[in-house]
Each structure stands twice: as C-alpha cells, then as structure tokens.
Image (cartoon, rainbow, N blue to C red):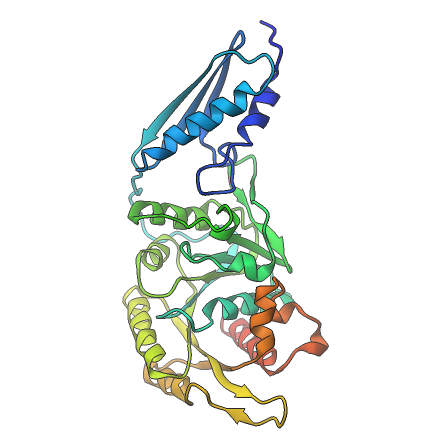
Length: 348
C-alpha cells in the first residue's frame, strides 16, 4: 500500500531522538528493532536495558512527537521492551583483535595529571610512528574528548560497532563524546560494567600498535572490569611526589599485582617547577617521592615531568601539549617523549 511518506523519512526522524542524557541517537545505539507501517499508521519497537522507569516514558513521547511531525503519518504506536541490565558471564580476558599492546595509565587518586600524561603519551607514541588508540575509561569524569578537541558523536558501522573519532593521529573513544553538554553519567554497577566492556569490545579500533586506556582514579568497578575483560600488556602508575599521592599509588599497585597485571613503571608528574626567569628548579610538592616508590615496588621510574603552564592550557583548548610544533617542545615534552621511547623498547 502506498503511503505519503517513506521509511527513510521515518528513520531520519528517529535519528533526531537522542537517548536521555546522551548526544547519541536511538538508531545508532541499536535500540530500534523494528519500524512497521500499516497504511498511515506507524509502529516502532524498541529494546532497552535500563532500571530507570523515566527513560521509556520520555523516549515514547519524543518518538511520537518526531514521527507525527511527518506529513501523512497517522497513529504512532511505540512498543518498548525493557530488559534488566545483566552482566554476561565472563570467560576470562580475551585479547582485542588487531591490537598488539594495551597499556593502562592509572593513579590511586585524582588530581595528579593522569589524563594529561595519558593523552600526551599517546601523542608521543604516534609521533614515533606507532598506530595508537586512546580510550577514556573514566565514565564519570571523562576529559579526553576536551583535551583532544573532539566534540562530534561517534557513528556506527554495518557491524554495529562504534567508529572511534580521530584527532591528532589518534583513534579516540570517550563518554565525553556521548554525553549531552554538561549532563552527568548517572551509572551504577551493571551499567558501569556494560559501558566499559562496550568501549573496549564494541569499538572498531582496527589495527593498533598501542591502545592507551586512561583509567579513573582508584581501584573500583571499572578497573576490575577491564582486567577481567582484556589482557593488559601492563600499567603505568602516575603520581606526584608527595606522600598522600604515593599512599594511593601503593593501593593501585597492589590491585594490579593481585590481578596479574605487570607494572611497567612510575611517572612522577608535577615533579618540579622550572623557573622561566633563571632556570632554577623548585620542588613545590617535595622531591624524590616517585623514585623512592619505584625502588620500593621494584619497577622503573620512567620519568619526572616538570610543571609547565603551557601543559594545562593546551589541554583546555583541545590541543595536546605534544601535538604542537617540535621547536616549541620543552623539558616536559622531552620527558614524555623519552617515556614513550622507553615503552617502545619494553613493548616492541
């Protein structure tokens, strides 16, 4: 039976409906299972995995409004199958196809510059000729998208895999690319596990030499999900020199060792401030903490990164520090480049 509208019009309208709290639409999320037409009437079938009763009601209203705006559409019926989120049983860590090495950048506490180190380390590896991906595993406080100047939504391929965004020669995935504006990621246990596994296994990473994972601070659900989902080539622990940061690094190191993840070494960030006026070093947060902790753990001290105002500014404007011209690189950039070279020796 001929209708005054097409299926392409219906799907275009559905693609304007975003999942609540996200910028990604319900079609690219794979939530729409059927679009059926009976004369002028339209039936849409969705399958959701959520414990929030408000989400189905909101989606039903937005879908009805979007479809009824199409000339000729009559009654719109939205059927939503809500399934409780259930974590699938794990058969143990399984390698990511095409990815040679997965390196986790971790810290015991926030505020030590872990994401800054992760982003610029990924850039340094890429500048050395490696194919590199960067996955922001901090679902609650994602910062990689901002620091890399990425703001578009990822799309999906024919295999229903997420296509990572590309910036500065890196393949990127971050919750910051999915959230709408300043919307928080309100997630609990099973959903945290689901999104973490999706970022690792349902992203079309392709052939990579290194996949850098920017982990959230601490030793919680996300860290445990990662070590149970994929085998890690190792982890880098980021700290600052003071004891309060080193105390939490020990906890992180203990967790990784208990889960049989090799600790590749420690990077001490904000090691000192190098005065631009006289070149003198000022140990604002103390000195030698990273070296002592590396010796205690029996792992290498990979580098001591100085504090430089340009580092923070570059992340704020979406231009990673090491992505700038070679001649503008400073001591901090050189240290991170040497850390990358060391990693390439350890994990060729």
